[in-house]
Length: 117
Image (cartoon, rainbow, N blue to C red; front, side, top):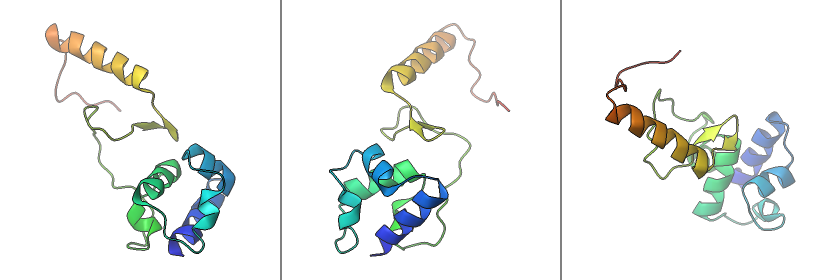
């Protein structure tokens, strides 16, 4: 299957074994290996795409570009996981950021258009 081959390729490029990808995606034992002959579920493929910093479209062969769409900003209000250097940012950290921002907004210190470089 296309997904298995592309997962294997990206894992190798990122110096990860398929077992490591499988574990980081919190899948059952050696689940990814079953995808050689079986189509993965959307939820499982999404978890692997997040680990490998790519899209499910790439893993499914719908595009040949493994890059994530680029956007300079994102919302902490989304239900999408926030990543930092390949790690999912825990909710407790996101809650701290939200608290700091809420305080700055309340005190009039926040700037909607401030850019950080």
